[in-house]
Length: 544
Ligand code: NOJ
Image 1 (tube, rainbow, N blue to C red):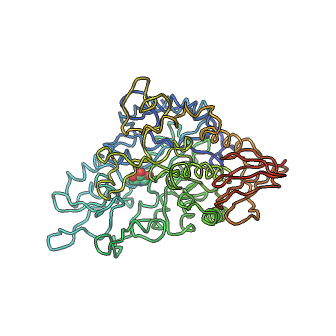
Image 2 (cartoon, helix red, strand yellow; image 1 turned 120 degrees about the vertical axis):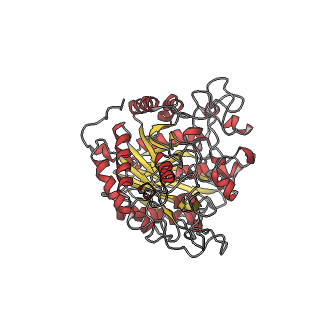
Image 3 (cartoon, rainbow, N blue to C red; image 1 turned 60 degrees about the vertical axis):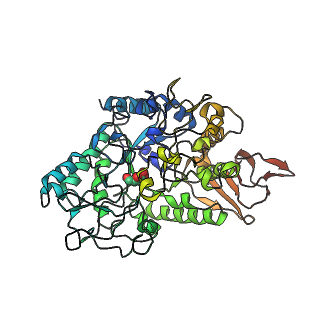
């Protein structure tokens, strides 16, 4: 049964997403309620109080729909059902009802660029043969070469290799990702109608929003023109242009028509239903085109994630993102990690140094105005698991490129002495990827109430972010003059003032004149009328 909407009229609360903290639940790795070694919806349900206490406002759930799981659920065979691996629709309804009762909103992933090759539409397309209406829903084409033995163009899969696969009757079909993920033809009215209906299906069940997968990909340039180079010809992978250049299969102007059709659907539901784009565009200006009152509410700002550990790099991406957000009238979405990228503890240097920097980066991010996305496990300071045995890696990209995203997808350690550290019910020993022995001391139980733990730092910072008038709103930041390598900015609302200082200078700095410390990512020591902020640390100070 669909859960009842919590509000019946549109209220100021409809803007909840503007400054929300959204916690990304990578479903298969979050919590396993049925002891099969894979996380599931009931596992999430059991852990909702943990998320409420952490201080997040919403959860984004990665795909849990019926799927052969070739790309961990980003290959959907039935958009209106739950994969038995994760539960069923009743589990979903129970989970969302409980989440709403705890004041947590639910965002689900929508995967419109491609289906699974196990989707009934694709099976019908293969069976019906060339020239059939069934093939029109996908991107089938004749090959080049005398016998059509060469792919129709030079496009490359993001997961490596050609983006085309030939079927037995000789035609080729497009898959920008794995061959098990055929791209849909979004110029087909049935495709559009189907997804509008799928959106309604989940909105009727009470979801508060959607994360749109490959939101820049649905429309391909007419005539499917060559890019002009690829790893086979010049050695340069086309995917290197992601977020930096134009590709004929990404960020085509017509894609915006799709979102202009979706927005009225979202707006027709009460309670502020939103959508966030996973979109890559050549410039921040082109990315901003996905956002607005007639398109999507947000687009992830991956430039923040890509910033290197330097004051200049952070300052530049923050300024650009904030300037864009002012122009489009929507807040920035800050992200440090997700299920596709190496965890930021490791990106920033790994080990103790990486963890120090990751903690400082969290305070930097939480002090910024806008919406924040936290990837599960970052509140525990989890590093990337770099030494997973190859035979356990499941990312389909691994077989094609040697690169794998499994190391950021290892199940969450909840407690206990032995792997998988409470991922399943007591006594359950299974987990689809093994947790390293070093994670015993990083578990939720080990870090709860432990002074100085990363989990307690996140809890404290999120509580202050919600409660402090200077941080809770969307008021702009003001950069303060500092010594080189130190970032300092102020947020002011009325009489309330918070200053965030991040020390990336390589040496301890003395901070004075910003008021009393509220929270710090490393111990501060008093010196004269100020405080010593150690290297690779951040702190918030307040004055009221
Ligand atoms: C982006 C998702 O985040 C990633 O995990 C997935 O492999 C691709 N889109 C394809 O759906």
